[in-house]
Image 1 (cartoon, rainbow, N blue to C red):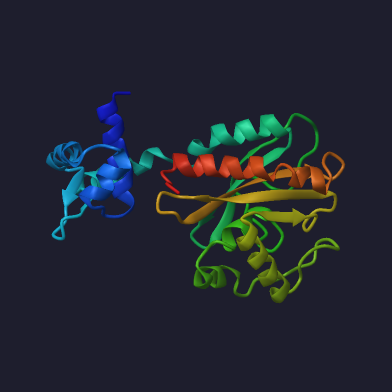
Image 2: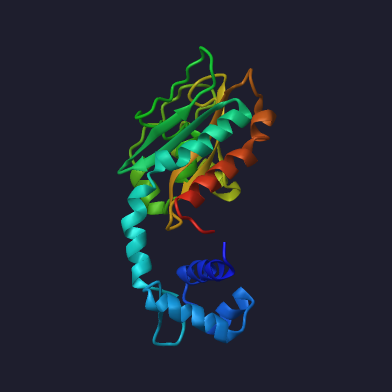
Length: 247
């Protein structure tokens, strides 16, 4: 990659998150202000950057248009698939992808290891909100009003001895998930089956999906499964990055 193209990409990323002064941009690139200004003027001529009335530089209208028109190329399931497959191959356990669709959280992909064992989750099936790691990972990171809308009236049915059966207990669990950044299903829907999950963000930084790793307790006990949390979170970060999220 040429140095000029690399610097132009850095400018687009830097000004795409917030308007910047010429001094900020030249410092970020490590170049003289005149060099930064020439790059900015070229980007402005192409509609990829614009100078604001206060003198700062921000994203140009063409950049927004390109983003809007290309967003259809970044379907969640297709984008996530290679990363889900890599996580499954690395760990040997079942990987799920779930997403918020309107007012329902659905499983939209699953990659299982070879073998006869089949778990509850099916692609296209709604997620049990109060038991699944993926639903907790999503609900904990949504705006509180949106979370309330999704779980208002939800029945906290007991499925196993560890199922959370009250709204208060579930709220405490979501607070813990938000604090640590990942969620669990501790045999809450099926006995002897547990999982860990991490949120996926879109280009706007909004959590709209989650990746989980599911295993039988006989295959991986709690410490072993929790030891794979960094791998699950890395997978979620890679999917988020491919969707356009810039931390």
